[in-house]
Image 1 (cartoon, rainbow, N blue to C red):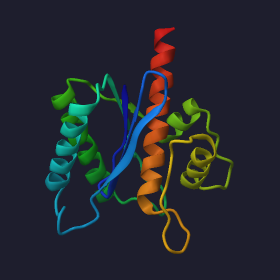
Image 2 (image 1 turned 90 degrees about the horizontal axis):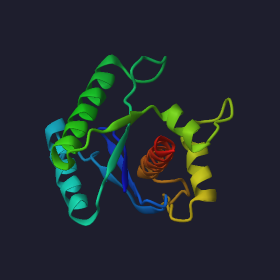
Image 3 (image 1 turned 135 degrees about the vertical axis):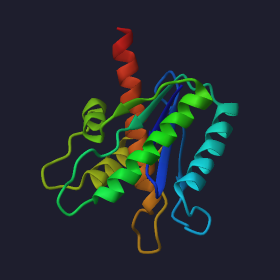
Image 4 (image 1 turned 180 degrees about the vertical axis):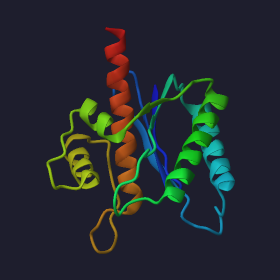
Length: 177
């Protein structure tokens, strides 16, 4: 089984796919409540506990993690945000290695989408295209909506983790052939 992670300091999405590329588990860990998760270490502890729970139920053989952003883009993340995200990504990577004995493989989001066969039309928001594609093509993918009819924030992270896991599955199949 493959574990795909979309690591973020606010919400981390996770997906497990089996040897036949079926989604076995898809969800998200929400860290936005500052009272319960005031630091990176409290968030890391939550991830550690969750990974331990997954370990008891699933035989994870490979782990794919979305590579954290490496450069600035106008109007997006600041240097502090990129640094924090990169640190957290490293902590989660170490937890995966420490708990599972598996060195994670990193995929940039655009590469994972390309491997998975998803093309983002110019001018459209990638997150929304990914979400709609999965709703149309992955029966196991279910999302929740706000009272205004919009997808809840964690749904985007769940969707991204599916793309990472599915791209990981394709990479594993290609490496076998």
